[in-house]
Length: 459
Ligand code: DQQ
Image 1 (cartoon, rainbow, N blue to C red):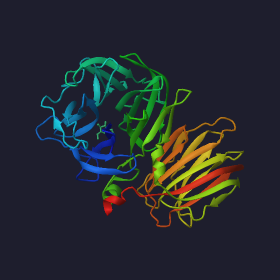
Image 2 (image 1 turned 90 degrees about the horizontal axis):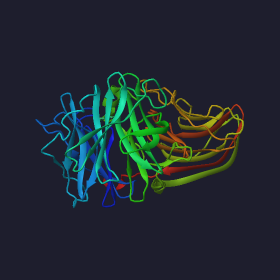
Image 3 (image 1 turned 90 degrees about the vertical axis):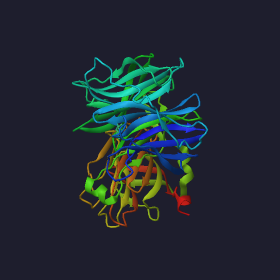
């Protein structure tokens, strides 16, 4: 699996569609998978929602898109792939079907039959649709302009079938590399209101220089987006995120956690790709995005251990009896004068394997060090790094979720860093806390074993 698609709450239930290859562990032959949840925590698999139709505009793949409520008719807007064409297609569901399992493709597909004229587009895919305040439908479309790079294009429609091109919503600045680079294209763009601003979320894609998810916060005048602040949503493994607003008014986000192992290792495992946890987005007073894990995840907290007021002076302590590979860890540190401090997770008893979550106060840098995460030579070892500057005397508050190969680290309300790790040893479950080059204090350290979400399916 890869990108989350079509996030929607329908009759109170959360639907999560996603890019899926049902017949093999590597990316190919894109279908739409589908899962549903009442509580954001326990999910039920539903049948495939979309499959390519031979001889049609999506014969070579049903790529990313969204689902909207069109006056009671669930309507799926996606990228149909035929040869080199990647064009906007529609499918409609049955509003009375709470499971949203039946989809009929529109006979007039593709509903946007060609990219806009007058732009030299090297890439064009990934529609995302919302209802504007004027009652019209708006669509932001991912694009890459030859010689420029990432762009988000804007369309408007009254009926989701006839679309008028309104021009570029926003075009990347090819002179800058950070934080929002143009890359070759912006995949999966999404524009949504948050607080008193609009957020443009983009997945920066470049064929040789990597992928990452970035955001801009700014204003939208109905035609153009003007950024005021911008940042990297996640400098780790999360890509192609999509968001939805739920009936509690929250802006929820999911992303695809990409693999960090070779194609051969994925083949051997028989699967690849993980969906992130549900995140809640907020707008911080400095105009940057705050992220935190959805509070519903706390219902998975099982056996609990707590340590409080632990002084650390250039040492590393084993937290006996707290280890595991499915844990939630919440820690609040006073960084003191330590050069670095943090947690060691998935540590084998002899230290052969370990993953270090390291905070360096002077640099305001959070790193997940995967240098010794795995004995398997086929996995990525590069550290993953996020900027998390703290104010003077501000504590470092971390929430860490370990779920086997998926690691999601939240520096509370400030940023997130997701990682994939592949320890090989059965004893790589140890947990430690450390400070180096000075003194720090762990004010509180809570560890919960996380409960399994799939039990009922096994019964
Ligand atoms: N994944 C989809 C595309 C999208 C990319 C194909 C982003 O629609 O651009 O699986 O990961």
